[in-house]
Image (tube, rainbow, N blue to C red; front, side, top):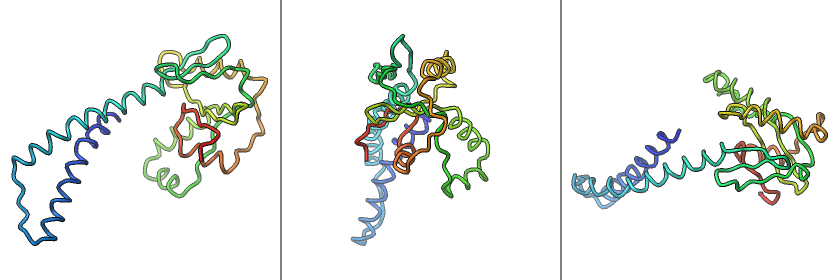
Length: 190
């Protein structure tokens, strides 16, 4: 994902610049000739941006993948920026809502293995609903070395607040669709 993302950020600005130059040449009626030396300059100016964007993508992924437990809280993030004390959890919902939009039906037909994995991941996720109204969709089952153990332990420690009959509101479903897994969703997020 990060290599693909980095290559996208490296190529996309160059394509945008080429389209702008082509549109300008078409507008003024000039022949479309791009000096190769100018293109070298364009590529050299986009490389630092691509390196920065790739680094940002890697840091973001790393931040979502680092989780650990203490006796009293769940701590997440590369720099431990997410701290969830167990007493602040109002409800634990087993699983995340499934997406029934037409794009998901198309994905099921075209890429069934990815669709099956996404379904499995949503079924094996937890959604921690905090007393402040914040949501934390949590899926650590595949994280090395002990993601599955952390998930089991969180579920065991919070079994007294598991809500088996919980129904997500339309607003919660919308928020969970827009935000990623393992990301704290603030209450005031619109």
